[in-house]
Length: 114
Length: 115
Image (cartoon, rainbow over all chains, first blue to last red):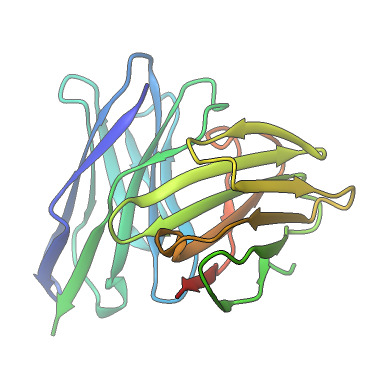
């Protein structure tokens, strides 16, 4: 069975500062890993995903994440925060067949201060 | 291309009633998944349908049920509503079954309030 832990339910950064949202996973098999973003009153949107191959994954809106098997982590980063990045971010895991339901973390709310 | 649509967007029901929520997937998508989102439990998987068949089911009581029609549209039903069923219900569609293998596109959700 898979599980996801997102460290920090709320992260606050200044505009232009580095964004770092932490995600650790537990999986008995090689995982597929995902980051989703949810803006107020909207559904989720896929930011990026890791399946196989390159461990540094680039996504939309300047975000990227690195799969570190030894640390069972998949942290999300962005070099410079923008006001429009304020949203809730969810990390999710599936097994490497891609056929098991996604298991989501509890989410991290990102605030960007001007 | 139109996105995933969910109706209604907001709903208020009384304990003991039942409710039906509807989801229309993106044209050409044959898989529909449903999730419940609450502040306490986060996002929890309810079920996934593909070609009118339930392919996966989450850990929810039998009061929660769903179905998919031949045009891929899906409905979920909750009977005998409880206060704890108050949540945002999200629908997501994808080309085929396998939430990890195929990108899911989410609708805006239906906000259900049970009083």
